[in-house]
Amino acid sequence: MLLLNFYFQMAWAYIASVGWYIVALIGVIWYTYPYIQDKYTNWKIKKDEAEYAAKYHKNSDLLQQRLSAVEASRQKMQEQYLKSTLIAKEKEEERKQKKKEEVSNLLDDDIMSQGSKDEPSTSKGPKSKALRRGYNPLMGDSSRGYRPPKRSCCGKGGCG
Image 1 (tube, rainbow, N blue to C red):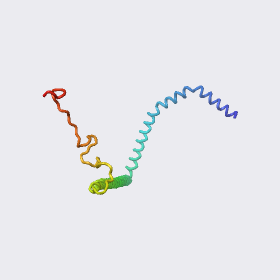
Image 2: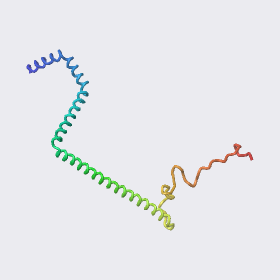
Image 3: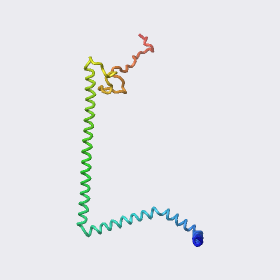
Image 4: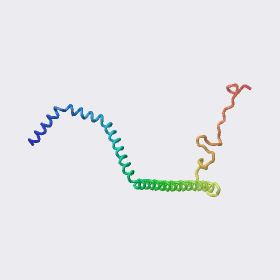
């Protein structure tokens, strides 16, 4: 314990004598780290490219194998993509077919309920507005329309 305390005091005295230099060095490293990292990555890329060129320049069969493997993987990915698009198209067609069947069933049910006057109607209101052709809920009911008032030269229309 006493020996550890002695080493700690000795290290602390050294740090205290050169402390500002250490702080300045840390600041310089902190400031230049992005530049150094950029230079290192560029150097590493160039080194890897040179190794790649040297490796495949010496052995052209290896290059052909690698290129054929890359082409095979691309072809496999393209086939998977085509399969997935075909499946998606089939699902979309099935969804559209189901929607058409639902709409036709609704229309058939509506026609059947209107066609038989003897049986009490199960629907409590008039025919659904959503099924009428040309109906726009923002325009209101088509039987009623806006008519502008007649214009006359007098305010109450008494100008004869």
